[in-house]
View 1 (cartoon, rainbow, N blue to C red):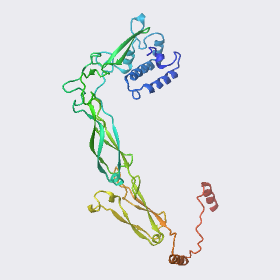
View 2: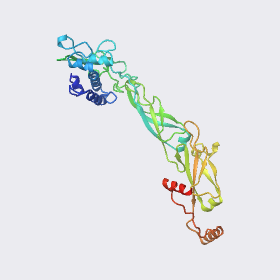
View 3: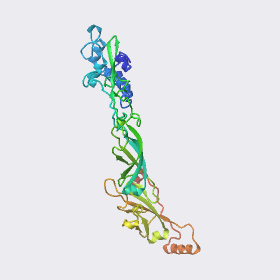
View 4: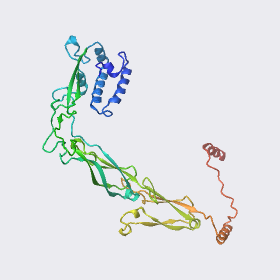
Length: 389
């Protein structure tokens, strides 16, 4: 790793402030702990940030270019002081390499577990009115042999002799700038500060094992495909037997043979014969409640009569209020029934005779037809409006 601040950012010594800013942003995106959580990347991210804080400040940059301490203390062999990146880290991130609050400290063995996601397919009625389901999930659970500690029964983790429990060790290098001091995670204990001399045989020292278990999840009324139900602390147990993450159950609603769902509204269609549409009729339609397990003997309405008024045209819609899907926040959608009028394609002699007689009575043997122009453009409608006046 270079000791020169310009080299750390990958810019020339005569780089402009804008070039320095662009170089830092590029490196920060690559090294940010959210992108690269490993210890080496985090350490380099701190060094790059410290270098940017110096070079982006004209006064500190000028002091650094003259060979002085950008923080006012001066450095170099002639002044008998060692230049330490740790000092720069302390100025912007707090703490020192030693003493209370110094450095990053040891990594915790006990950490929160990851969230888990499973997908569950349910029927439309179950999504509408809610349901309880038993799920089999395979996640990490706390090891019962060591109770999550990771050490074999009767033993415990002991402080690391290499870093003396600090979880990190200091490395000092000499250069023309003085002493360069950096902190690295301890290789002996992997940064934990403790060592497990006798790991648990059941979990190999991780404090958790994989297990299949059964959970009961309550799906609230009104869910739809893509809805996620959160089960707190039912996800993966963390390393060292740490707190479990959350389990998310993602809902997928299966297609229904009668109803299509649009938000909280239900849509269906009925085909009505031509004569029935002209004279009016009634249809028996099932309700969504008919799909529930309790069935017809529990007082739940499983069907209803739909009235088709006389003269109903194809494409007419009947809107039945409150027969749709209950909403997650209350209320209930509507049921929209679309009517399709069916014209007979095959007639026997008697049927044809009756239809011709009806056409003669209604004067429809040679209809003129109601011919209308297609939808006019905006300019056409404006022209007609001016012509009418």
